[in-house]
Length: 328
Ligand code: PMV
Image 1 (tube, rainbow, N blue to C red):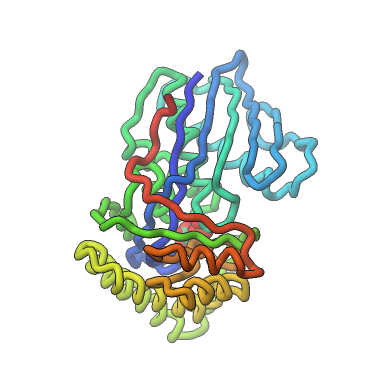
Image 2 (image 1 turned 135 degrees about the horizontal axis):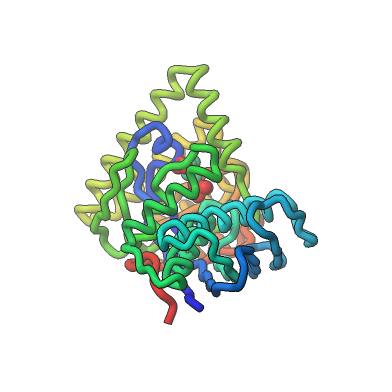
């Protein structure tokens, strides 16, 4: 039996624009997915999951995802979760050279699904690491990141950036632009998350931005400007200038709003945090619904979010310096 954990992430800068080759800066947080893998007889795969903001489910199938699970949660979420784990296990079998290994997989996650905290990437990264260890192969974090990217690429029909998977595998704050990935040093970041209890449909939101970009040159310019904001944000991070990082996060949120990916609940959380004195606040991830990230050294933004009707949950998140790791 092998267990690995991998962190979720927030985007400090650059989501959506990263799809068009602009840089993005995601940052790993100490909310983790934990995946336990045990080799089993035969070539099947049995997956059990708790706490994916689903009620928990168990599915058993062999080979492909054709079997219909008998559980009372939205089919699309189950199929998505199963698709990711199925591909992750395929990558692990290939990496270890054991093409028909069977597994029992159990997943626990502190990361809500589809809320912009990189839950699927964290599950995939931890699953690849645990499954390869179970088969006697230890991959470097970089190798896990590459295979996890291949999983997202396959499951999301080629609509994936390296941002989530790389950040979850190596930890820290990272700069991702196309195929280039590097870790960047940051000061301690006073991260507050606000979560509205909902989920955004990443594929639909990415398609919406693509459509706008095709229709209007100002949308293409907005995307390029997000790239500029991200480059300035990277300089401010490297200089430890949190006030400028906050201002640029506000700017980034405005540009994402212009691209149509914010929402009433995300905006109300962003404004609650700003009104309470946060250095900056923006949505994180694909948008639509889900999470915002704010920077605040005091307790005021978190307290304000606790009293904001749109908020389901708010918490302080520590930067996860270590990416995927074996759970002792
Ligand atoms: O909401 P998430 O964590 O799936 O983030 C999506 C980020 C996008 O830039 C919108 C898409 C991508 O693959 O980079």
